[in-house]
Length: 89
Image (cartoon, rainbow, N blue to C red; front, top):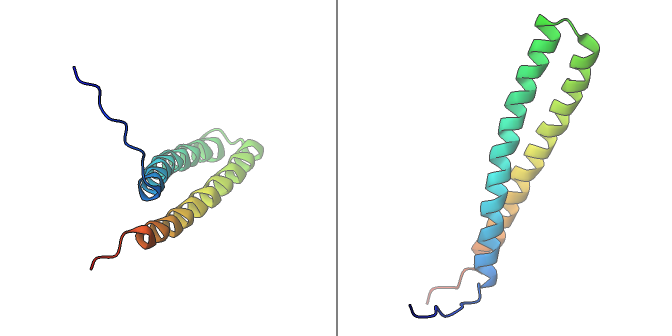
């Protein structure tokens, strides 16, 4: 088996890798929001644990803020990647 030649990633490739990883984080963030919402509903409605539900609501708000900030950062980074692309002649 021949040794594969190591190819150094370009800054654009590295930028795209970061975006890919951020998209994975976004997926998990969305899943966390859904799970926290379910917890909040169960605690608030079914279990009547208003004090704990209020704490979960705070977590939900913070998770939503993180998700929104992550989306904005990905958009900014996608613009950076677009600017890094070689110009066509």
